[in-house]
Length: 460
Ligand code: HAM
Image (cartoon, rainbow, N blue to C red; front, side, top):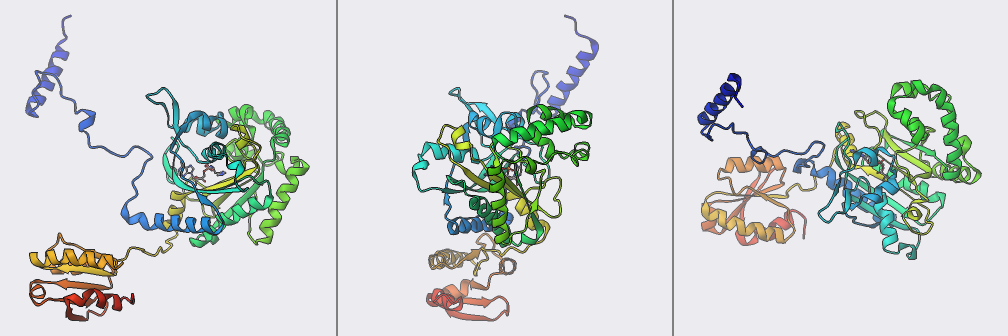
């Protein structure tokens, strides 16, 4: 087929450019292959750099202490699970399952998903390990990454971390109240107690909710035109979710909507009243929120979320949870009333940062070890290990030769003492010790350096 003049010139241009770029390829344009591009993070994924580690360490250690205090044993769950675990438990019509899962068919032909949350895995593990035979309730604690392919924005990522507390095998309202109390205590210990509100509601059991759903459909149907496109679908599939739609037009017609509390049957009402009474007894303030319904299908009775008082970006909840009395049975186990909650770690960290809450730096070095000259460097490397073996937190910068630069770094790291080892000290068998705040220096016997330092640091 004859080629047009334009095609020929374009090709020539590419060829000339390729030759110019040193990539002559017989006239073919050279495209930078994907593998030679500088790799970048996937959208919605983040690296956690050392500077932020203090937040993660603090949150994890506080949560671990609460878990120990309240008798929750740590469980580590896999990141990949069968896809059907989530479609059956979280719900096949929920946003999470419909739009947000990272799912794929693996090389063996299995449908698997990166977990979007952990409660489903908890219920699976409960059945799989025969936890029904353990002392009830079985109390479990977890901490780890979850994956949802949502539109990334402030406070919303595609990989995010949750910590969670789950109590399986008790229908007692005291469990619900205690979970809310643990969540509240966790935030209070982080200095966020005054900055958040606890939202509580009950969405009843399957029976009373069915009647309420019908009532909602009767209410919204004549106002269908005012609903957003998503809520028009929700009207058929899950009318409850219309209640927590963020669209202004949907919110504008909520005012007169029937409220679930009026539709709870006696058992659900009694359960909810007891949860509320327990919270009152514990002097925990909360807001009864009739529009709180949560976005996962497994909930029954109590649901709750904790929000910052001042909204952070478009995301609200720091965490949420509730009762899921039917989940273990739905996944093939025996009836096992259960409840739990999880907290979004990044959202808590965002709030800590936003409110400038001081976090104690854990890894502040007690001592900085400075050296000048190659012999001193070698000796300092040995001394570093001796100090570490005694449990002293030491910093160094063996890659630097200038004493000035090393002292600057010691100051920056807020080390209490700096040990200085130079050529002269190596020959004399001594070492210089400098108290950083006052700048007082003394020369001590090298062999006594470790013991002297321990005394100074009150470690003996
Ligand atoms: P959830 O409300 O879907 O509940 O998630 C809990 C928390 O995880 C949210 O409040 C939020 O802080 C955080 N989170 C969720 N999605 C994202 C995201 N894309 N980016 C950042 N943070 C996010 C559950 O997952 C239930 N499993 C909670 C539960 C435990 N219910 C009973 N037990």
